Amino acid sequence: MNLHRDMADRCFELVGLGRIDEATEMAERAVEGDPEDGRFWQFLGLLRHRQGDYPGACAALETASLLVPLEPASRCALAECHARAGRKGLACDLYRQLGRDERCPTTLLSAVAAGLGSLGENEAALAACRKIVRRDPEHHHAHFGVAFYLRRLGRPLPSVIAAISRAHELAPQVSLYRVSLAVLLDHSGQREEACDLLRDVDPTAMQCSSCLQRAMAIFQEAGDWERFEAFRVQTEAVQKPRRHDV
Image (cartoon, rainbow, N blue to C red):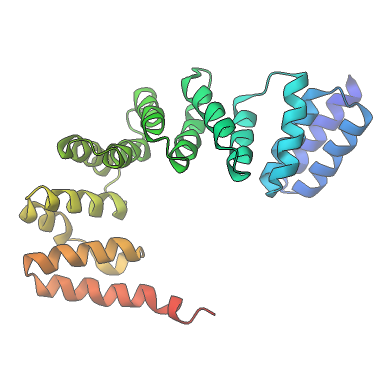
């Protein structure tokens, strides 16, 4: 037991130092020495997942699941491994279980929602985002997630605008929220409000080409050519390095 604790402590120490490869090697030696130790199999799976070794992570986590109940983080990692291997059904089952599990940490629910969304499970992804909002009403990214999945599901525009407005209110410095809200307002016939939302924005502070282009489109439709030109120039400045990529 003391040896196990010493090895576990050393593994965590190595992870804290960023020495993931060494921690993985130590975890591999631990399971070789005691193949029935589900905790180290689980730890090994998480380390391999962090390294991007998804087949290896899947094998370790599947072994661990036969020996001990998997922690939420391990179940989330295993779900991603299945998704990357094309096993959508298994991935969805794991993500859905996590979304319903009240023991799943709030910090992990964002990954659950993203995983479900990537698999086209938009209703379940929306439910995960709403759970985050219930637990943490000031989690701006979750409010944006609610808006994103409502939009994907074709829900009424006012409900989408309400969610993105809350995200923008909580984090006005996030350009994506501001521009997304402006686009939605424009689509709902509130062009002047959309322009007002963007008029004081410094385009040179924005690095998202998509956001810049969407803002350009709003000012173009509004006939505000001065602001259109400012966003056009910044869009070219942001895209220019990409044209030189080989």
